Length: 120
Image (tube, rainbow, N blue to C red):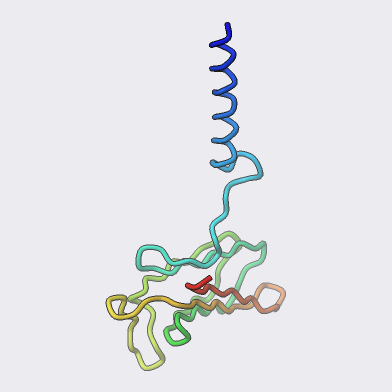
């Protein structure tokens, strides 16, 4: 009888721990709105308002733009597609992403500003 109680309590504790780790309680674990994954920059609109005139700047030098980003939407920008105003493309073999700035305007006309810093 004691073994059954111990196994039941162990299973219950394991289920609760798995629930917290898997995001069952309190909703799913949310990733940062701006991040770098596998040679691409990912920007997610985690707000309830659409964004317009979205500009993503890497290392204060390389840029990419998109016309809009809907609520809950995401844009994935391959690093090789980011370029300077003179057409120079980001070269991941020679350079790393140190900072990312996202600027946009929301549906109400308010500015949106997100920042990512490698050191933080």
